[in-house]
Length: 281
Ligand code: ASP
Image (tube, helix red, strand yellow):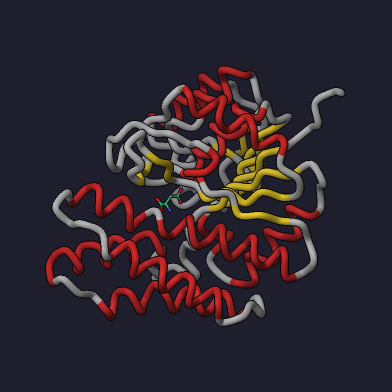
């Protein structure tokens, strides 16, 4: 039997920030039956002065390490998910699941600060993926949350700056056999010792690229909050010209030079397999 075409779609934090945004994300996923492997970030900013869930989690971890308790910081994270769950008409259970998950992470040892920090940071994407999968199921779609641990996304134990280990690709290729829409949390994986490890900030792009490469996706669609890669930063220069087509090498150079549209380590896994990357709003 010929290989089934599969697209990997990654959605950034702004697309996951509110229930309304998540509904739009789900409409995009459902509009194309080949969009079967979906990578999500943690909820980002709802408005300009808002705080990303990842930053709330960093505050939570820091406060907890300082004081041995951080109820207000914990509440701030839980409230973000509660607002989303309510907007999506999900039951209270999912909010309890998020709170339980956070409390369990806080129960881990804090002697290795970088390790503890990664465990907390990863909660943003992990719970985001659970919520999106739950929502898709609630509207009658076949969707499943995929745990990076079960899927075998193995990373080096460089906390906060992990690299993918080569055996991950064979492990993740098995995802092709799973039916329905798979929702995979971005940004983190596991060390061979079983510790949660994260990429550097913005690393959900890297997760998407690794998955696209592993399953031999027909395209890696990176949904972000800009329409295109531009010749200049659209937040600084008004109406810059968009770049319709760019090579991997040129894009990587631009990422190193500070073009933040893609994480600078995003392109290597897809480049190796020649998988096209489509940057979309
Ligand atoms: N949530 C993480 C961050 O804010 C990773 C990501 O969004 O790609 O850096």
